Length: 535
Image 1 (cartoon, rainbow, N blue to C red):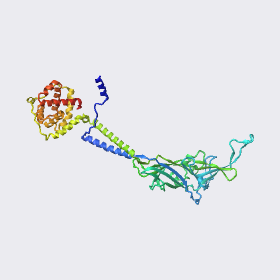
Image 2: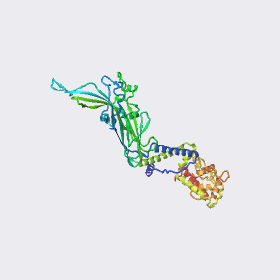
Image 3: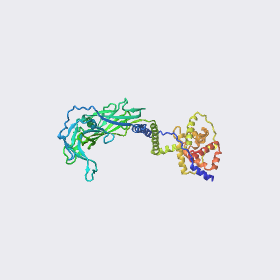
Image 4: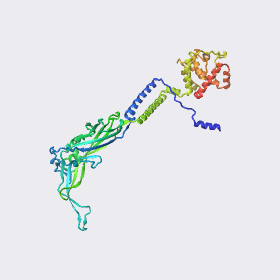
């Protein structure tokens, strides 16, 4: 029962803890790839996080508004324009709707200019009036001696009276933009009071742009100048395009915007960076202009005239200026977003590094396998290798203790045993891994000092150079007083076979202290082969 419980618990809990180990690869290919990846990652991080996405900043809320008005000091001394009482400007849409016999007048400004009439946020400028006069009379049903259903009767008197607003192009139409940006550079920004100059750029329908002058966000332009900015030329320009858009089959005359009306849209965008990769700077305003070629008519409420029982109804045609605010994009520094960006960059660089390591460990053939095996060693392996490295430096100045080899050790000290293919492969890989660690002079063979380092690393106690020399001579097959990888492999193969038999292992270790050291070495190697150094 306890054994069963132990097995269950062992599956629920980790038997090992993975600890990150700092290691290095000096291969020139790896270094080049890593440096390239580091440069590319840094460039991409700067390009996207800092410039493109601007993750360190946040769009601040903006309060905007627009007001328009016509200057009350409009002059009246200019002569009547060419379109006044000019039959060339006559147009007949149908028998009911005719635009002829048009004279010019200078009506009151409150008739010419209206705010928000018909569309919220819009401003209306009339260029043409068509007045209809009618007379009302009570409707009485004689049969029932009661008022008719529907109220009084209305009868048109005479023909419509048509009028152009004389010189409407000369009227000065002012536009004031109100702009408030809280927490802009640490203070509340107000476009009307700030000392900072704000650029206003108008984007015409054809895509071209022009920067306009203003005073405290007040733009002053005549109606004619506004018409030019919208790319319309003038209100009297005619074309087949206009006739096709506004006209109907059977009409006569040419279409002119002066008596058809037009929608003029102004889409306002407020920002402090002009392009995707530009860093935020001073606030500026862009106004995108567009045109809707369509009849624009508004009807004024009927008003009584000086003549008894007569009522005047007025249809006005003109220009409807419609202001809209596009999504604003004024960026200000944000400490919170900056902190998140730093974390994003940390993750970004770490992910790149992980990808590089995966490439190094998978895409360099045999080298990748060798590096992967080396980095996956148990921490005891790294402890042993560090101890060997430190010990190899100290052994050059350390006095060598002498140990007398028994006479029997002059012969081969390891008896030959039957080999096992799987075990031999593990031993071969083991030697391939540890040999470079102890081959300090990188000559492809271990000298007595290097053999001493190896034995001390595995046995965990001091072993004299003299003893190591004698051991080396006993296993050296080419008599060069050095042990090469093949000889070390064969030595370990035979030793592992020896310690499989507990009786033989004890008898061999009892022969002398040197034999005991050899057995200790084989036992340590056997544990490493089985458990990768996990003890």
